Image (cartoon, rainbow, N blue to C red; front, side, top):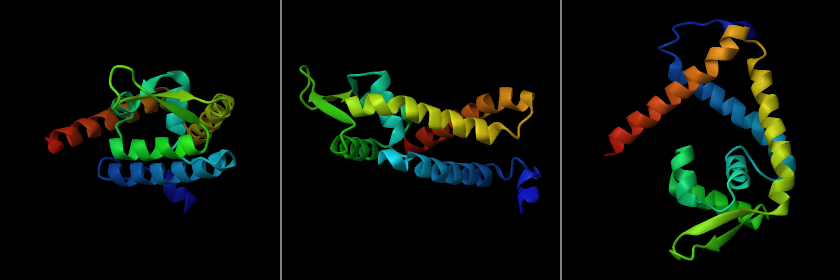
Length: 155
């Protein structure tokens, strides 16, 4: 089975299949590695965003990570309950909340970054140097194209 995974067959026809396999398995790996902090692969990104930009709003996060606002709200509420962030209503617009990291989030931030970096390195260790250089850009380009197509269909 492992040798089959390393064969590249019909790359364009299998794009959806292989990105789904990558996403599913990477999320599973992250879930196990983040479990120690009581968070999962769908929550860590919010801790990173809030630590990097204290005072950020849910709306700003939504624009940056391309996720549904209701999913973001749910995750932020869970993280607030777990002690990773606090919400403060905006002085200008009471419907908007600014998000701030707690000490717990700040202490966890570096460890999360190390876990992510480790996963990146482990996934890409089978790549040639040239592939390591071009793969992230190609992956980002494909992801942004999918976002663009999705946005067009929503309109």
